[in-house]
Length: 354
Image 1 (cartoon, rainbow, N blue to C red):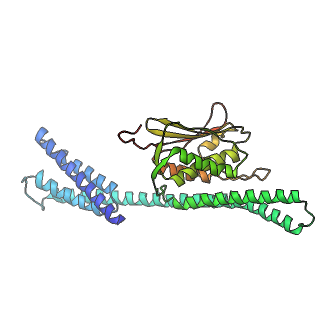
Image 2: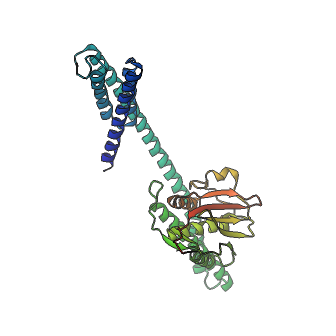
């Protein structure tokens, strides 16, 4: 199916290019009574067809059609074929050489670009695997160590210390679950796109469900909320948008060192709902802003063995927001801290609605 579409696309382009060359030559003959540019214009058309289409087929066909067009309309006797004239034969040879050389060069360039893209994909896959391996190793080691300590010293370890170790196991297990969710989301992404299941969602209901889930995992972290008082309905995939907001809030909890306040704001501007997650923590280093959404941040473990998420969640978030027709942006706040922002189109109000 893809090959047929490409052939149809190439065929339409070839016809358009040759028709344009023919019409330009007719205009020059009618307006200026000159045919000196005729071969050059058709050679240019053949070059464009060979350059923009796949393989050699359309370039060679364009060469033959161009030779016939020149012989029929722009060579004496006009509007008749004289295929044995030296001019016709030499034009055919020149145009075939042009189309063959151009086709060979463009085919080689496309093959090199394909190989380069494959190499880049392989490099990114390797970086992702190294990042994931590093991130999974730390909590798994912690879970194994804590559980071994409880089992091997069950009678001697005080209940308070057991409870502390069990809380560590719980926290590491929750983090692993979120990492797996992000990785599963990556598998839903194909070539930068993701299938959406859109429906009309009331903003207040979305935020209530999000904060209920967030506070269940982080009961000690307060979120300062600011949303419009008016009724707001937004067409979206609610599961994916909730995941985006959850990831942004969690990133602030994990990475915004020194954070005292965490904000979730939604503002309405020109039929758009603008979501922003802000904190007053340490902000984002300038050299990391460019790579923030790639999932390829350097995996350097902190000295205290704290967890990191390698930006994998952020890369998924950006893809989800792109699928909704918007962009996820990150910046440092002037007052200190970081802000993540995206906008979604609101639902059009029906007649009679306020």
